[in-house]
Image 1 (spheres, rainbow, N blue to C red):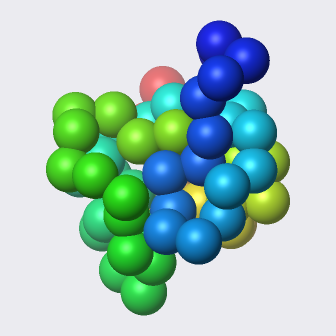
Image 2: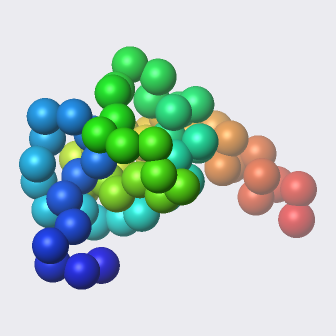
Length: 66
């Protein structure tokens, strides 16, 4: 992740840790307003943790299908 990337959540401004699909982020974190509508959204560590917690059950079910 480039050093100049910041979190895509409005008002955050922290350094980005991960880049995820904007569509998926909007589905999982509907209460958050995004800075732009690009294909990918950069998330800081704190917002990425919120994303992971919100998708925990979905990811577990996906793994069971293997």
